[in-house]
Amino acid sequence: EVQLVESGGGLVQAGGSLRLSCAASAINFDDYAIGWFRQAPGEEREFLAAISASNGGTYIDDSARGRFTIAKDDAKSTVYLQMDHLKPEDTAVYYCAANVRNIVAGMESLYDYWGQGTQVTVSS
Image (cartoon, rainbow, N blue to C red; front, side):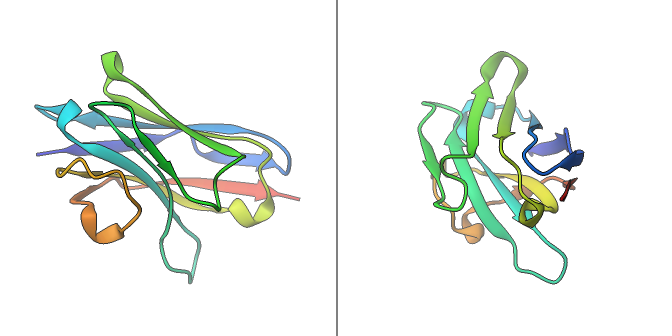
């Protein structure tokens, strides 16, 4: 019911910025919450931030707060993750996900649909 496509990843030097996009195809886009997660090789998936498509409310994990910002563009059915002051430890595959309960939270089990991910590599 929900198709998610991430884009915007790439190679960037430490201290640089990237803006990731999550384009959503859904009949009722504004009924969902969209979250951003990342997973480094050999590591568990980590929650970063989530936003309600309906009211714009956000929840930002401590690991992302201050450097990462989540936002949305209702006209484009797209959620963004702006990443600034990137560090090598930010290297991971970044995923967006949707939960149909519109719960803006970081529990992975809440999310029903996942994109394929976009690679972010930060060099030192």
